[in-house]
Amino acid sequence: MVEKSISVDRMEHIINVFGSFDENLRIIESELDVKVLDRDSELKITGEDAEKVYYAEKAIEGLLTLASKGESITSQSVRYIIKLAMDGKSDEIVELAEDVVCITAKGRPIKAKTLGQKKYIDSITNNTITLGVGPAGTGKTYLAVACAVTAFRAKQVNRIILTRPAVEAGEKLGFLPGDMQNKVDPYLRPLYDALFDMLGPDTYAKYLERGNIEVAPLAYMRGRTLDDSFIILDEAQNTSREQMKMFLTRLGFNSKAVITGDITQIDLPGDKISGLKEVLKVLKDIEGIGICTLTGADVVRHVLVQKIIAAYEKYEKTRPELARGRRPLERHKRN
Image 1 (spheres, rainbow, N blue to C red):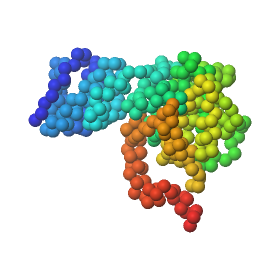
Image 2: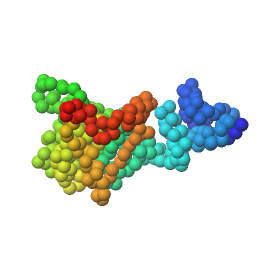
Image 3: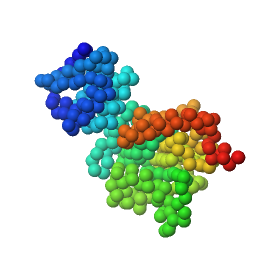
Image 4: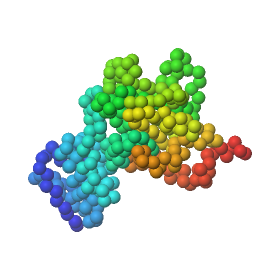
């Protein structure tokens, strides 16, 4: 039997780490096959495997560090910290509690929840153009909007421009009623949601009326030069190569652009090349352009989302038509 001890200064930190009804503690014990006991401001970790006891020690120390900085410890963060400890990255955990990206309309601080998200935010801060690529739930759009709102509040830019291609995800919406804004609203809803959270609906409406915020489909960008703006192109995997080039050449003086997308969820016809997949190769060595790849480990939605993404990745590797880069629809058409 191997035993490790951790001294804790404040009981509330232990309560935060253990979670409601010790649910976080049970995750640590189950994942690492250890037992954790709280005795007189000291945590005792015991187990048969010395390596797993060591991982538990590092994970708990990391969680206590986050708790001491006021972070709320969730079951999701516990699983992520355990993974960092097992990957030998426990020393980097403290980075997750450092910089606040933005404060929402309700006073909630927005911070990176994973190291991948931290690198993504740093890339947006330090580069003129950032390409954020990764699966659903990794915070690509939400964090980009948070950075845009921060830059706008600091008067670094005069406008926030949010855009995305109007491509349907496998279904036809038909002829929607209403004016042009009503017709494009369904495509742009995720961007509205993020802005409402950051600014509140009243402030959002005020800036929209003044022209400080613009939300429009990608087709509206042609022929424009975007100066003093923070521009976000969302769902960029559904841009054509021509649309991507058009968007990139809109960038004006004192502007910053963030391009987000998931190359595993391309809704273009089988004979169309994704502008995002192509631009990752074209711009990979240009100074001032950052390419940040997020993974399933950076998913901050329900824990099942990580498992779903991993299952799809495993399944698609076994399908020969996907492994060769051809879509089943394309093969069917040729037959």
